[in-house]
Image (cartoon, rainbow, N blue to C red; front, side, top):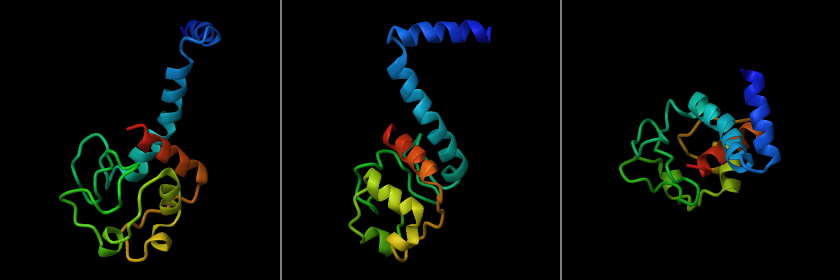
Length: 124
């Protein structure tokens, strides 16, 4: 069965039929998995429900500290940061260094993990 799927996939890819969808799915999968493992205890992405942290629906392009109904630290609320892939990269690497006084403590030392999570967030 696996060989048949691989063969079909090879035909579709060589014909250029499945490449965009499969590429997006493959790119999002590691980020989604990492998000669930490392971020999901505090943040929601599937629903606009706040938890320990604010929901992250539409986070890319949003101004930090602006999700309605979430009680942010004054530092993050007043930071004026706009969440772009670049600012998210810096923040996830060391939140306290970027925004002194933030309550976000989770750090991602791996640049590869940060990029995967940011790609996932941007796809939502």
